[in-house]
Amino acid sequence: MAYSALRKELSCNICQNLYTNPVSLRCGHYFCYDCIVTGLDTQMESGRYICPECSEEHLERIPLEKNQKLSNIAENFKSLQQEKTEVLCTYCMDSSVTAVKTCLQCETSMCDKHLIAHNKTVDHVLLEPTSSLSIKKCLLHKKPWEYYCSEDSSWLCASCCVLEKHKGHQVELLEEASENKKDKLRNILKKLAPERESAKERIQSMQDEKRKVQEKADNVKERVLALFEDIKKNLEVQENNILSEIARQQEQLTRSVSDKIQQLETQMEDLSKKIDHIEKLCTMSDPLAVLQDSEPDPGDQNDDEEPTFNLDGFVISLMLHRCITDISTKTESRMKFNTEVVTDLRLEVNTAHNFVVVSDDLKTASSSKTNQNRLVAKERFTTYRQVLSIEQLSCRQHYWEVEVSDYGDWDIGVCYPSMEREGEDSCLGNNDKSWSLCMYDDQCKVHHDWEEEDLYLPSTCRKLGIYLDYEAGRLSFYQLGDPIKHLHTSTATFTEPLHAAFYVYNGAWVKILH
Image 1 (cartoon, rainbow, N blue to C red):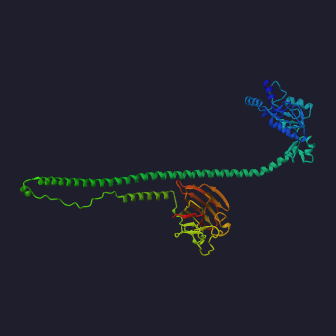
Image 2: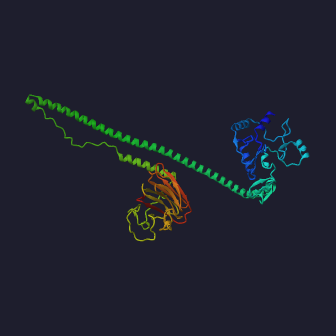
Image 3: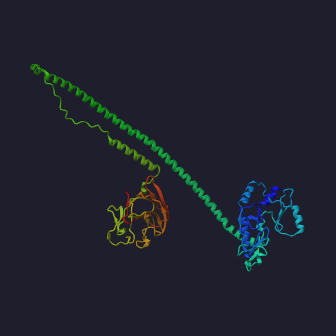
């Protein structure tokens, strides 16, 4: 009983639940903040603000005062309570009996026994057992909700219908409004069910794609690891071979040097003996003895050039070259890198703007302040400083690399030959016939059909790779550094052959690498 009494003291008189952020009115009664605010909002139209508990009336909106201590007590009580979730009979004081109905007017819940007694005395609205009666009644008039105003999207009691606020509004019974809403909801369900099924199928499809990506990545990873393992083994073998060759040459040269040293030592010993003998003769006082001694052979003049003892660097370089070439060939073969995708591009002078200089080898386009005064040609760009490649790109894969200046503005990309040659639409990316990666004012972007997307390109990056898979409709840009990084991939269905396209401005230049 003490527990029930304490719970009642800590319960809001509006929602019948434990206080949540309790606030008090001037009369001293407490309510949940959200509950009393909702109640006061309901009373705003009448201009009368009444305490739901003591009915004290105010002409101005009642100020709310928060009670932190009561809030803490309620929160602690919530954490300790072990009550069952079912609604209990209000009248069964000595035992906990589950209620079967709740009377909206009496605000009581009853078991079967007390429900029979209740129904014999009054004819009230009965609901399924609930402890939240506040949402079932009008706080202002203390009457159950019976109608629904579709214009204000609000519930009304009988008294609310006659208020000035709702006069002339389309009002319907709650049951009718509920059924009408259910009909609308059923129609929505008919549309949502197929969409959900479609989403489910797409999720399954994406999960399958995710699995395939994982399988492909695992496969490529396995092949790369196996390849590097073979490369390591091959490198070890070639390393041993080259080191063995160096050791062989070293041994051979060392032996030759040793033989030469031994030969010179013998020669030096003979010379020392002759020198000693001559020095002895030179000290003799007996002329006859000096003259009788045979004159020693002074020896051959050693005019031979000193031999050179160098390692055969050529054979070592040749071995290294063949080793690297073999590894490169095996790598390309095993990873199926098709060198045929590399396209040798040249610039078409007839398309170059008159303030674009094209190098003699047709590989470099540079922005110039000097008019080149070229002949008029229908292919020539006249508004923007652009130039196209001679080669058409279609029907297969293409790859080329470029080097760009570290100053000025530049674009690299592709376009259809039917792209405009003058006016705003003739700029790369300013139409649906071109795709480009550009650098303007030190900001890198990808550009197509007037739409831009920012990219990050380090200021130190001067070399870029462009890969075009025409049939798959993919155009990819790569940062050629250490390591190589993917920058962006554009997708499209290409309908015309493409040309590599370049734009240079403010002293910029772009060079097609061999």
